Length: 399
Ligand SMILES: NC(=O)c1ccc[n+]([C@@H]2O[C@H](COP(=O)([O-])OP(=O)(O)OC[C@H]3O[C@@H](n4cnc5c(N)ncnc54)[C@H](OP(=O)(O)O)[C@@H]3O)[C@@H](O)[C@H]2O)c1
Image (cartoon, rainbow, N blue to C red; front, side):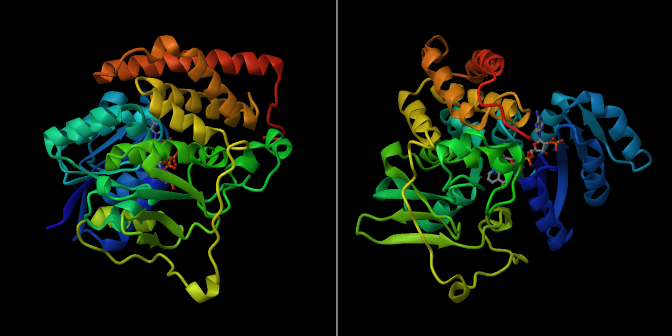
């Protein structure tokens, strides 16, 4: 019987890669329950006309007319506004891809986790902001969380069923991004085009900038701690520019198991899509002799302070990871819109963590506390963005 799927964030990089696999497998393998997007109504409508979900949801209610026109006469049911996205997430489906970018993905991902079934988790921000709460809800509903991030999917595979708490450590690889070899001066003058030009992976704008600052790896360290119940000391990061080894598990006997593959998100997505089975993909195969050699180096904490900020925020606990994530989203958005420079991103996150004691007080016992901390951290980071924009510090040129 066809597996029923919902794709939250269907128009994004991960959402489209998922639909590419679904399209290739055909309707006998998968049937679409719901597709969602934020504001790209035309693209969403095209996908819906092709995959014929039971429900289509656009988060931005201002796009309702566009979606209505594009779906007119199709017989497809649709809705607009954040409630419609929640409705899509709460519909019964065997498998859900959680691929909305940023903290906006929290509430829909939570709906999917509460409903149970398999939740393929690309939205790392959900675990960063509310890891304990998500894991607790998954335990209650019986939802199976399948890691989609290539590094976490690699660890999941390399563990081979061994309890992660019994291994010596896990290692997440990082490509190093476009500024791996750049000087601080070059990074200070980086344009948006420079920052999103990832040397290996093709991804959405926000995660591409996160890769360039290495905040992406910082968020992934926190994500790994929650997914595999590990302390941050057991999660190492190593720079591997070829992005062929995605993650490694070091066992107590000294054995190191690595998961390798082409840097193509369709491989980890396919692993989650077919789990616990395997499915054919058209992803190019690794040609090891042609590759010749693989290189590894330690990350540079001076040029990439975001990694240390993420570790410190997780260790400090409470709302600190929420502040880290919210301030980063605000700062990345300001960078993408030309209001602050590239190096300002980590500086704004650091300032927000330093000055956010009032927000970080006390444990986050429910999602309302998470949303309140997120909103307060966005206000705080917004003030730092405005102050830097006024000073004209390091504005990205030629964005
Ligand atoms: N791209 C990768 O290779 C990759 C790898 C690992 C993990 N991830 C993670 O996967 C997630 C998605 O990344 P991506 O690169 O696919 O992002 P993306 O290309 O920017 O796509 C984001 C998706 O989320 C939707 N969206 C944005 N804001 C929303 C909102 N407020 N409410 C509802 N939907 C919203 C977008 O809709 P519109 O198109 O209408 O704006 C789009 O469908 C992120 O958390 C990222 O860290 C990505």
